[in-house]
Image 1: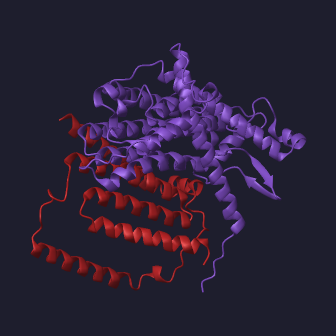
Image 2: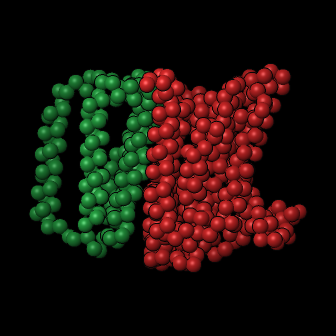
Image 3: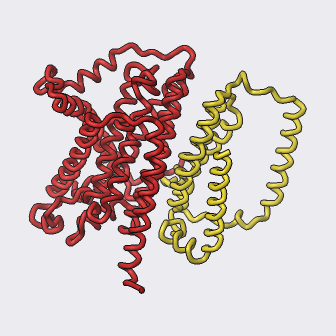
Length: 165
Length: 357
């Protein structure tokens, strides 16, 4: 086992453990913190795949900005285990069955996908580096890129309009 | 049995480097507390600490000892795990920035050439922003876990302040990146220290001004120390903290201050570049290790100057009101930074393509 493999298994364990904690912990603040830990582990995976820009942007945008917003809302509403409404047990059962079906469909759909046989490039391949990514975004994918920025602009304008009301 | 293939010398080298840098930052932060009181004393025409040791130099040690000896109080109604996690996170994020800063060029030890930088990643600046945005959590978690209304309010204030000023800071950095064309801090320093290269402050005076104001806000220093505004929020987000946990919060502020001083020196003032001297020819006449020492010293002197500016401002300027703070951040800093970005972009384009009209 070399360092890359050790890191891979470590990060995988953290990511899966964190994701499980998000769902199972009673306190919503713990859930948010576990989700942040999961994002960190995923960023570690991106770095192993040599996609440094994606890794850092994942941290800045998701762990740094969106999760702070989540935490703001949860802290201000002071959600606790006591205030959480108890779900109907039939509802829980239905949820479990629906989730299981979804898992089944996903496994069946992805079973023959080509990703099974392709090896991930670890520590090589340079499309994830910032220069190459920038060139690809502004040459090949310039129209989708600009359209997504228009989407962001409309979201911002919408937020301002709602805020003015 | 699983074979472990790890380059031990590499791991050892990095471990020693990390240990050294952390020790240096802690010692600098420790003596910043002493320097802060001395500067405050000087500005208010008094002596400052002068009892413990010569010139009061042992004062930080005495303070540390006092904090360790204090009773450790964890409020009953608090969330104990998060209450302890808060100061830990604050300290951790404060230290993490040091990983991408180049502290000197290279040294030679036992035939190995060692870069005086923990990790030269090609997204150094983005890494720093990621760490900065993590800094909010220490404050928020600490404030919320105390289960105290004042702490929560202060934490929310602090978090929104940090998020608001991060934007302007990022925009001011974008203008710098357009000039250097690289996100690696090492490349940025090398461009500045190359012969014929000027420090970035010459090209980006407005960007530096925005950056330093935002750095004050990010470190929660006066005039932006609203999170701990004593006279309205008692003691801010660390009101319920005592003993060394309080010490960690206070200490993290000084480490942040040191790190942002080093960052300002690196980005705008040539980093480890020794001014008025050609470093490359100096290496030939003095040897690599000697020059590395001088370069480290030069970076520390620059950082020390910025730390002094931090203190100077703290004891000169009164605190903003909250609405003034938000007004400054969103309606002054961000438009200014955007304007700076636009001007820089136009200049860079014209320099590359010539005057097209």
